[in-house]
Image 1 (cartoon, one colour):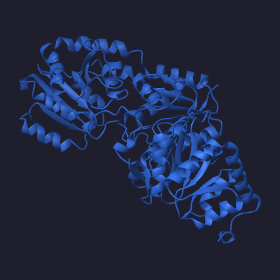
Image 2 (tube, one colour):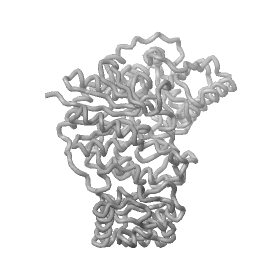
Image 3 (cartoon, helix red, strand yellow):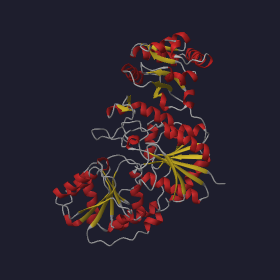
Image 4 (cartoon, rainbow, N blue to C red):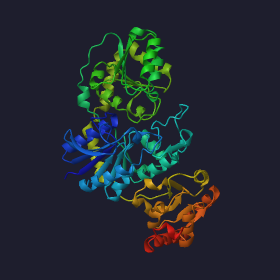
Length: 552
C-alpha cells in the first residue's frame, strides 16, 4: 500500500538548482513512480511574490506548495531558523494532506519548528543532512582564521550575537540550543557520509538515530555522456561556487607549479564572489589560453563532455559533493582535498587522488600525475564507475523506504532543562547570567531559547519562564502562566514583581548573580517550582488575570 509522503526543503527546482534540491526532487519523482503520493512543501525565491505569501502549483507532475522567502530569511546573522507565518502554513498543509512521513531536507529560511509541528500530529519525521547548518551558522565550520572548528560550543568566537527583526541582540548559542531542541524530535537522520553523521553526534545528536545512505545518482544518464575528443592536453575541470571555502584560489595557485602551460586546460564552471579575482589572477599569471571561464551553464553534461579529470579543492569538510558522484558515474577520475566525506568516495591512487587541503603544491603534484601518465585517466575513470555503479537513485530510495517502515517512532527525552526567555529586548544582566550558567553549570544543564520560537507543545517541557526584558507586560508571560510554568522577572518590572508576590507564582532578581541563583534554585527544587507554576496557572486562568490595573 502506498504511503503519503511530504518532502520539505527550503528551495526546490526549477527556480533554484543545487545538489540538495536536485536530490530531493529526484527522490520525490521515484517515490511517486513507485506508487506513493508525494507533495512538496518548500520555499520560493522568485521576486515577484510578496514575502511569506503561499502559492500552489504543479511542477514535473508533483504538487508543490511554495512560500516566498527573501534574503532576510536566509541571512546568517538573523533568525533564519524560525518563522511563525511559515509554521502556520505548515500546520494547514499537514492537516489537509495528512502524510504518513515528513521527509525534511535543508530548512534554513523556513523554520526548524516544522519538525515539532509534525511530531505533535504523530507523523514520522526523517531528516536528510546536507551540511553543518544544524550546529554551525556558517555551514562550513571554518573559523575566522581559516582553521576548521573542532569545538562546536564556541560559536561566539565567530559571531557573538544574532538579531531579530527589530534589531535586538540575541546570544548566538541560543540558535544552537533551539535547533538542537528541534532536531532531538527527528525520528531518523539520513547522512550521505559517515563523516557528517559523526559530526552531528559530536554536536549532541543521538547516534542511534543515524543511518548512512549515499546520495543516489543517475548512473545511466551520466555514464552515457559522449566525450568530445581532446588534444594532447589534459582537461581539468572545477564545477562549483566561486567562494573561498571551495578552494578555487588554491587551484589557481597550483597552476604556478605545473610549469608547461601547454600540458593542460583548466575549465572553471560556475560563478560567485571570487569570479573577478580569479579572472585577474589568471591574467596576471599569463594563463588566459590555458584557463577557460564557462560561467553558469544550463546543462552540466556539457562540462563533463570536455572533462578528463574533475578537481574539487575545498578547504571546508564537505559532506558528499554531487559533482564527485556525477563524475564517477561519467567515468571521470577526481582530485579532491582529503576532508569531510570526500575520502569515503575517492580511493587515493585508484579512483583518483586526495591532496592536503589548502596545499597548492600538493594539488599540483596530483595534477601532474595525470599529465605525465594520461593513461591513468581511463583506468581510474573505470574504477570510479565500478565503485558508484550500484549507487543509483532507485537503490537509494529503496533504502529510504526501509527507514520509513522501520524507524522507531516515539517521544524524545529532554535531557536538558528548558528555559524560555521572553521580552522585546534582552537585559545585559541576563546575558551575563546565561553565560555564567553555561560555563559553570556543573550538573545543571540548561537550554535557553526565546519563548516566541517555541510551539505551544514545547511549554510542557519548559521549567522557567524568564522575563529578560524590564519592560515586558502581562501578555508576554501569559503562555507561561497557562502552562503552569513559574516566572522569573526583573525587579525593575514593578507590574510583574507585584504579580509574583501577590500570586506567589515566581521569583524576581536584581542582577546577574541573583538571576543565576534563582534559576539554580528553581531547577533543583521541583516541588517549589511546581507549586509556583500552579499558582500562576490559578491566577491566570481561574481568577481571570488580564487587567494590568489589578497590580498597578
